[in-house]
Each structure stands twice: as structure tokens, then as C-alpha cells.
Image 1 (cartoon, rainbow, N blue to C red):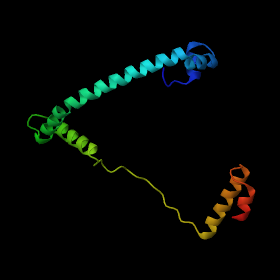
Image 2 (tube, rainbow, N blue to C red):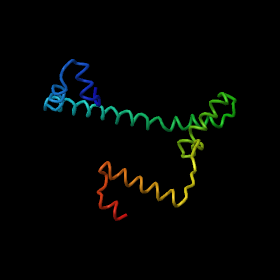
Image 3 (cartoon, rainbow, N blue to C red):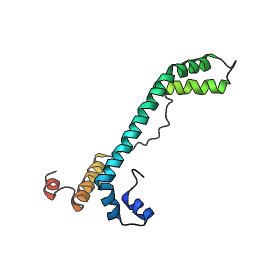
Image 4 (spheres, rainbow, N blue to C red):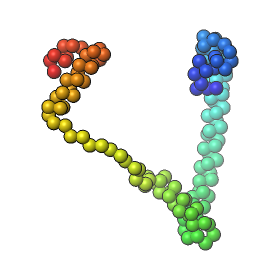
Length: 134
């Protein structure tokens, strides 16, 4: 439940949010969470070592798949492997980009500025003196 909001924990356990907060902030619970995090970190280190030890084999297999030209591996697998390899190398495909262009006259721009300043003044984002000096 690490990362779960206190409100959700309280609802699940049918207790108050204050009880959840008190419990989570207690020394006993904090010590237990620290132990759990240390265990998780140790597991991650072990997993990282294992992945790194197998990386040369994985690289060789990827090279074999790419260089196979459909003899032993399906060509779709070779294509997908090559695509993944290129993505990891920083050559990802072009992403679809959609944009819009608008043209405003100087008068329209000034009008937009005035409206923005007025809205900022109304919502107390900036002080009135700043607007008058603009």
C-alpha cells in the first residue's frame, strides 16, 4: 500500500485518516518501512546484476535475429527486433505532431494583453499597480 493516499487506506480499513497518519508516522512503522525499502533495494541490485550478466547473450541473440534474414526466425520478429534496437539507440520513429497556427493583428494582441492583465488583477495574481504601469 506504499504510495496509497491516507484517505484510501482509511476507507479500506474503516478507520479515520488521522489514525492512518498517526500509524504511518510512528517510529515502529517507519522502521518497518525502512527495512522493506532496504530489502526492495537489495532485490533490485541483484536483479540488475543478473540482467547485466545476461546482456551479452541477449545482444548476441538480437544480432542473430537481425542478421538471420528470415532463415531461422520469422521476418516479423527480425523487423520488430531491429525496430526496438533502433529505438533504444535513439533513432525512434517520427511521432505524429499536430499543431495550429494563428495570426493576430497588433490590435488583437494588445486586446489579449489587456484582458489577461485584467483577469490577473481580478484573481489577485498580480497587483493593480503593475497593471497600471504596463
